Every structure is written in C-alpha cells, then in structure tokens.
Amino acid sequence: MISRVWAQSNTFMPVEATHFAGQVDSLYSFLLISSMVACLLLIGGMIVLVIKYRRRSADDKTAYITHNTALEFLWSFVPFVIFMLVFVWGWWLYYEQRNFPKDAFEVLVTGQKWNWEFTYKSGKSSSELYVPIGESVKLLMTSRDVIHSFFIPSMRIKQDVIPNRYTSIWFKADKEGEFQVFCTEFCGTGHSQMLSKVIVLSRPEFDRWLEEDPFRGKTMAEVGQALLTTKGCTACHSIDGAKMVGPTFKSLFETPVPLADGSTATADENYLRESILNPGAKIVAGFPAGAMPTFQGQIKDKEILAIIEFIKTLK
Ligand code: CUA
Image 1 (cartoon, rainbow, N blue to C red):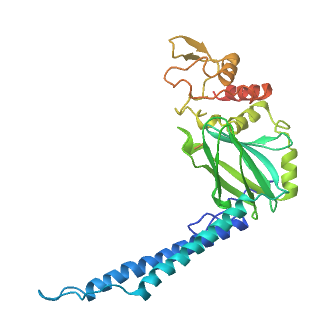
Image 2 (image 1 turned 120 degrees about the vertical axis):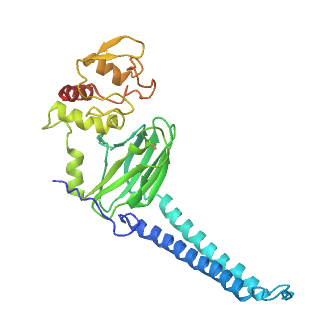
Image 3 (image 1 turned 60 degrees about the vertical axis):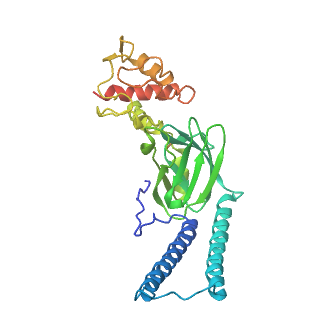
C-alpha cells in the first residue's frame, strides 16, 4: 500500500523535501536578515540624527560639511561586498539547479489548459508525478497550448513550460510523502485549478506503481472516473451539477442538450465521443465556444468508453 502522508511544514516556508531546499532557504534567510539589519541601521540612524541635530533656536546653523572619506568608503564598500556575496551565492545555486546529472530518471511533463500529465518511458501516464526517493529526476517539459509554469514549492524548483519547445528542470527528493504542484503562470480561467502532486515513494513501491495496469481489477466506470482527473476534465466539468467553465456531467447521459445554434442534441455515446474529440462541433447553449481543447490523438478508444461509462453512472 502506498503511504500518502502530506508533508507538513512548521515554518512559514514550505517543507524542505530536497537537499537543495535547505540551501535556497539559507540564502533566503541571509537576504531577509541582512535586509532587516540594513533597514534598522538606516531608519534607526535617521531617527537618531533627526532628533540629535534638530534645530534648537532661530539662529541655529548647520556646520559646513564637505565629505568624510572613511564613512563614504564604508557605506559603499560594505554593501558592495554583501551584494557580491548574494550574487555569487545565488549564481552557485542556480548553476547547481541547471546542471543535469547524467544518470537522472526522465519524466515527460505536458501542461495543457488545465492539467498536468506525466509520461514515463514505459508509456504509462499519470496526472500525479510519482518519483523514487533519493534519485535524480529530470523533467522534460512542454505545453500543448499556452505558457504554463511548473512549480514544486517543497523542491524549490520552478520552470516555465512553453508550447513548441522543451524546457527542463531536475530535483532529487529526500523525503517520502505528497507535495503540492502549482501552475504559476496565469493561463486562463482554470489556472488556479491547474494543480497536481508529487508523490515520493521508496524504489520498490515506485516500481510496483510503475507496473500497475490502470484497467486491471477496476470497472470501466472506475477507470473513467480516474481519467476525468488525469485528463484534466474536472478542471472545467463538475460531476455534482455545479456550473463551471463547461457543462456538468451530472444527469447528462441520454438527456436533451440545448445547443448554441438553437437545435437540441441527445447526450448519447456518440454525442459524448464527438464532444471529446471535436469539442467545437456542438456547443452547449450558454457556454463559450473554443474553451475546450481537442483530445484527438491524446486519448485511447478504450479510455473514451471508460469516461462514457462513468458519465452514465452520474444519475
Ligand atoms: Cu497553467 Cu496557469
């Protein structure tokens, strides 16, 4: 059984799930503390001097000051050293993050409005990123539509995901559990629902998961329900009757559907299949045209049938 423990953080930073996270947090703490010290010195010094050298009488005159070489050198040189330190520190972390280990385990990540799909070399795909603990994982990423951005706060990694191009990022998880994935590039209506999880498992558990056949031991409807999440359908279609970007699936099967052109269609198997493969063919009245991407070539016949079987159960 896969252990599903949400890793909780005790600090205001997300839980550190990779060695890299501690290094990023150290730099962040340094920036925070040095900024606070600088702020205190600057604002505190200003307040002290304003009080100390305030005008005391009508003929109080300020002394004629030209410059102070030692002071001017210090307030230029000390910040310069701190800025260079931050630059070299940041560059070093960036360099480490952009240098891919040769033996990394590769996973293809596809972003589309509005879900993430993770494809493994075995051909298996999933809506959640399963990875083995203690092994370098390289993500090869692309988008089917607009620019998205892949972000795992606990791994302290973030990288834009761009159509017609591959971008990469890597990490090595050193904590088992579940970690949140966000899209951090505004990509349309469903942006805030473009979520996923990283699930870090031991190598034997991971191997077991990788070999699992999603159809084995499950009914078609159960597989269909899982596919609605995997394929991102639930970002726009509810199964409980709530109105979202697209029509709900509740009580949909074999009911008349009013269309935008004034005609009516019946939501039978052929209608559902057509709506998955060619979403523009029949637009439901009251819903935007062109909101749904086609799933042509991205879904197997068996998967379409499984989804239809699940929709049939939503009475
Ligand atoms: Cu994808 Cu925001």
